Length: 387
Ligand code: TGC
Ligand code: FAD
Image (tube, rainbow, N blue to C red; front, side, top):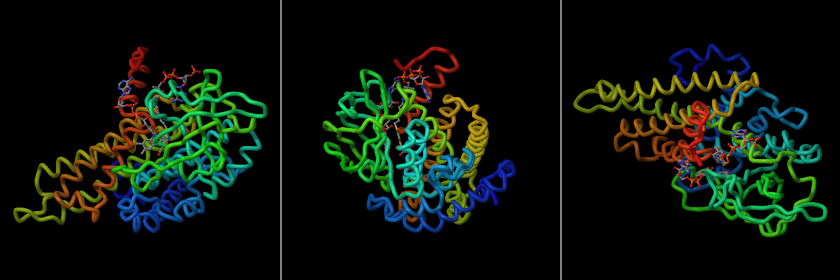
C-alpha cells in the first residue's frame, strides 16, 4: 500500500496500520462513489446527490470529534489522510467534509453548550444534518475583523443582522455557524434553517469548485435563543476553527497534486510524438520530476504537521506554512500536468482542468496564499505587515 504510487520517500512506513486502513477505505470510497460521477456533477454545477449520507456512513464526519457525541475520535493524522483521499477525487467533495468536520463540528464541540452538542453533533456525524460556517462578508474577506454583521442582546436571546458571502453549503445547511459582533466583539451563533428572517440563496456562475454549493447568508432581524451563542469571544474563535480546516486543506491539496501527477506520468508514457513517448523528452521529464519533488516535500510537511497536531504542539503559523506551500505546489503541478496532456489537458476525459480550476479557489479560501505569507512573515520578523 503506498501514497498511490507517489511515495518516493517511503512515507507510508511512518503511518500506523490503523491509519493506513482508514486511508485505504477512503480511497476505495472515492474510487467507487466519487470518481464515477464527479465530472458530470462538476459540469452540471451540482454536489452529487446522496453522497453526503454516504460520507456520513463512511465515518468521514466528526473524525476527531469525541465518540460521546457520535464522532470517530481518531487523530489528526487520520483526518489528514481522509482529506487527502477525498481531494484526490475532488476539492469540492473535500470542502464539504472540511466544513462539516472543522468549521461546524469542531466549534460546536469546543464552544457549544451541552444542549447544542447533544442536539447537533450526532446528526452532523451521520450527515443527517449539514452545517456551514459564515465568516466572510461582501466587504470583509481577508480582514474578517472588520465584519459588519452584528448581534444585539434582546430578552431571551440575540437579534442578528447582516450578510455573509461565499459560504460553502450555505443553502443546504441545517445549522449555520454565524460570526457576528456583539458590543464590538466577535461571537459565534448557531442559526437554524427556517429561522424567520434568515435566507441562504445559492451563488451561481463559479468556474471553480463547481461540485460544491456556495451561498450568501442573509440575516434580517434573525432571533436566536440564548443557548445558541458559542462560548468564545474575539476573532480567535473563528480563527481557531480555521486552523483546523487549513490543516486538512494542507493534506487535501496533496491528493489533488497526486491525481494530476499520476495522470501526467501515465499520459507521458503512452503519448507518442516524433516517434517516441513524450516521457522520453528531457523537458517533459523535468516537469514530472518537479511534481514528484514538490509532492514529496508536501507529504513530509503534512506528515510532520499531523504528528505535531496529535501531540498538541502545532502552531497556527506552522499550519499556515503547510496550507500555503501544499496548495501552491498542487496548483502549479496541475498546470504542468495540463501542459503535458497537450490539448487533452483541457477536456473532461482527464481530471486535470477540474483539479486546476478547483485549486484556484483553494488557494484563495481559508486565507489567501498572500495572507499566509504575511502570517509567516509576522511570525519570523515580529513585524506585522498586513495593516
Ligand atoms: P489578530 O490580531 O492577528 O488575531 C486576533 C486573535 O486571534 C488569535 N489568532 C488565532 N487563534 C487561533 N488560530 C489562528 N490561526 C489564529 N490567528 C490569530 C490571535 O492570537 C488573537 O488572539 P487574542 O487573544 O490576542 O485576541 O487578527 P487580525 O484581525 O490582525 O487578522 C489576522 C489575519 C489577517 C491573519 C486573519 O484575519 C486571517 O487569517 N484572515 C484570513 C481570513 C480567512 O482565512 N477567512 C476564511 C473564511 S472561511 C473559509 O474560507 C472556508 S472555505 C471552506 C471550504 O469550502 O473548505
Ligand atoms: P480579499 O480579501 O478582497 O483579497 C483580494 C486580494 O487582495 C487577495 O489576493 C489578497 O491576498 C489580497 N490582500 C488582501 N489583504 C491584503 C494585505 N493586507 N496584504 C497583501 N495582500 C492583501 N468564507 C467563509 O466564511 N465560509 C466559507 O464556507 C467559504 N467558502 C468559500 C468557498 C469558495 C468557493 C470561495 C472562493 C471562498 C469561500 N470563502 C468562505 C471566502 C474566502 O475565505 C475568501 O474569499 C478569502 O478569505 C479571501 O477574501 P476575498 O475573496 O474577499 O479577497
